[in-house]
Length: 367
Image (cartoon, rainbow, N blue to C red; front, top):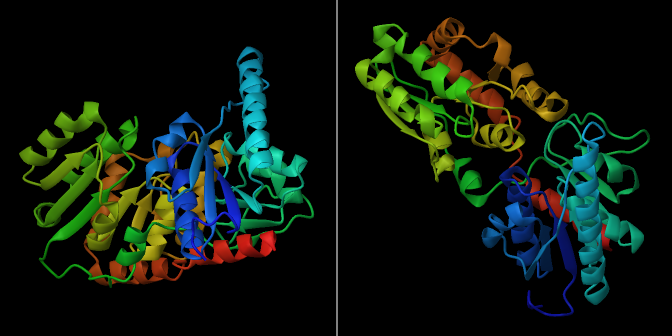
């Protein structure tokens, strides 16, 4: 059957506008297209920025907005935009009825999921985080299936159940997952990768360089640092590293994160769902700093499995100091065998077949 055949089954994927929502949608779309399905993508204007990489037969922009009781005026505008998004989704579904709708969370998923419920179209929820998001929480109880990115999923509605699939990962990450961890040799280079410091994250952009340059000379001079750094912190970070004789590459964005993870001896990062899932899939030890303002503190929950397995250290923002991070980095970087054990523990939690498992759940829901 041709993937473009009008008789092929149709999956409507509805996702919020961030990469954290869109990347799992992309991975599912790739699997479904390979199976001969048609795919329609529903997202907002922000999501359209990421939409080009998703192999969709059509892309539909939905208006959407948040509703917060504490902000009544803003909520009125959000409700109006959601109603407009619902009208768009219902009109599209009437013209080309999907066999199944898959919601990946975020407010842009709300209109498509509500349209599916009203039209009695089966729908599946995919939750990337270890805490069910607000939109997914509204629909999980009546979903044909809930696919969880982590083994524990908080805030599930009473009586509802979920299937642990893991988070679908991009092909580049899956390719890197096959690379064995090579522990640093005594007196050999130490490759430290720092991610999650680009979007206003001063605590990583500024604390990590100061912690690194305070390391004992015998460790500091072996370091090769690759650090994601916000624009306004770039010059400071580069100067700190250069003055301390540390080989470092600092940039607000790295296109090939998969290769950085593959080559890393240790990673310092936030604990977003994609990052934690990628660390597990590739099998790399880490120091995770959950985002303090994350909804329902979901990043701390995301990091829990790796922390409990001894694969990651979790340092809360209010506990992160230059002195404390220097001591932790020194302890980890000085012990190659321990890093190797931590890498192996991380790999035990990897789910490289997540996209295929999610696709199987979606196909069952549509049948």
